[in-house]
Image (tube, one colour):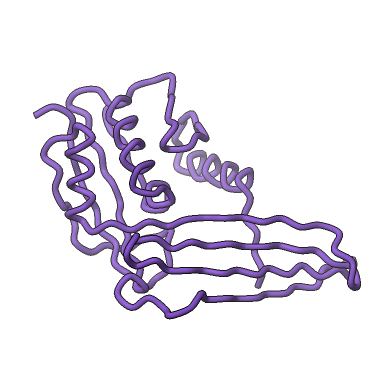
Length: 194
């Protein structure tokens, strides 16, 4: 089934989960490598897709900004994910096409092309959503995304280079709720200061 999950829907879902848990927190939507929050915190948790949607340069910048938003002895938990295709990348781009007929008779088509660059440790994805009535395209949206992956050791190295201390692997393997079931997820922990 074709599913489009907008940022607004994601924000509402996050707010609802907080409310259901009886928590009261302010939500901010910013790019991780442009983080500029009005507060400083004792801890930060970064899920894999938030960090790994950035290439290595932007990922390193994000870690520097996160460090600047933590107060001593601030703790950073960083979730990492290595997709299965890292070990055995396909020889050609993977192309998937889905179609769904709407109640108004139009058809929404999603075309997704994924390319794996093992040397750069990147998955590059292009998606195109088109809504057609007959042969006429009435709406189109293109989305590009990147998934970078790092080994736990590379993540630790980036954390140290960003000014964190004592970076270590907390868990070698753990469930990853925001990624496909295939692959390896891990959790890293670091602190500011000694």
